[in-house]
Image (cartoon, rainbow, N blue to C red):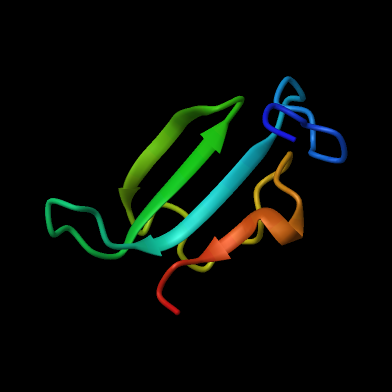
Length: 67
């Protein structure tokens, strides 16, 4: 049924995600992006390289975009 959100996670919960080694549309590569509460909190080349998953980011939300 259209508009039915039953069973979907809440979009109001505070969440964090780390995407490592991303390629951006402008051609930059190896970019790490930390997203907190739906906003980009940090963005840069290799910001989290060789570091463990930051506090507040679940291991399942630490994504390697390099493949």
